[in-house]
Length: 65
Image: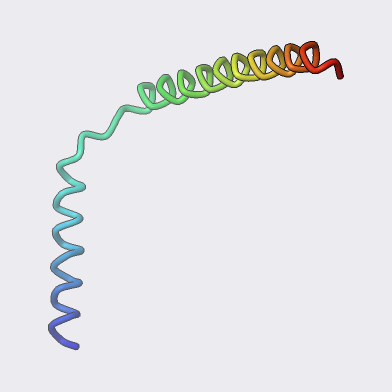
């Protein structure tokens, strides 16, 4: 049990050490990136919605429903 505890403590120390090396984005950079992801997600959802609607209408015209 002691060996497991020592390994866990060593792992946590290594994780903290690695996280200190991470280059975290600035607040403004994070906000801009988040807004870009939201914008492109909405655009893609709209595009997929239009394609889906168009395909449904085409299939209804072909099948006569």
